[in-house]
Amino acid sequence: METGDGVLAWRVLRQVGDYADAWARHGAAGPAHELEPGPFRIRVQGRADLEAGRFELLAWEDPFDADGPASPFWRQDGMLEAVVDPGAEPLAAIVGDDGAVEGLRLPDGDLVVKIECCGAALQVLLRDAARFPDDAGISVRHAFGLRMPHSMLRMLDFWNVAGRTGPGNGRARRAGRSRRTAC
Image 1 (cartoon, rainbow, N blue to C red):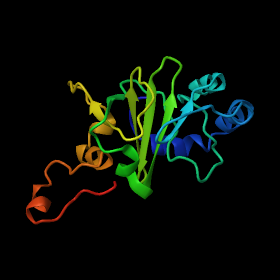
Image 2 (cartoon, rainbow, N blue to C red):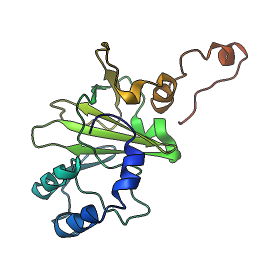
Image 3 (cartoon, rainbow, N blue to C red):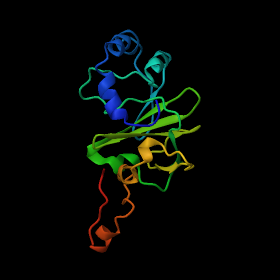
């Protein structure tokens, strides 16, 4: 799946009978995910998860779990890349109680981190990432070319998810008000 609206795509996929049947055969019946230690939940991609690739997913997600994530881990070309940044604000602090952070460790050592906040979801890829430190955050790296991923077209939304004051918000700062919010 190209970068785009993974939340809307998940709402649709949850209604597809073929996905529900495949999840019952592979996802629900498969072994529980192995977890890796870290400051947020980090699942390890298992053999059964590879079958979810036919639905453009990196791992199975329960379509019947109403309290589950807003978006599963999507297989994406051109996923945003990031690096662990010990000086950045920890991810859980950025999203607060209004969001969630989850990771998926891939067999090649890469780590996909999914950040959900206020009904939006963003995935970033950390290549060859070691264990994620408890007190670190991430810095996003992107080589902006002529083709910008859809999820980056609205920079203000990206900045809000990243916990930063969005571009063009100087008026709020001059007036003594902070626009920094959890999402």
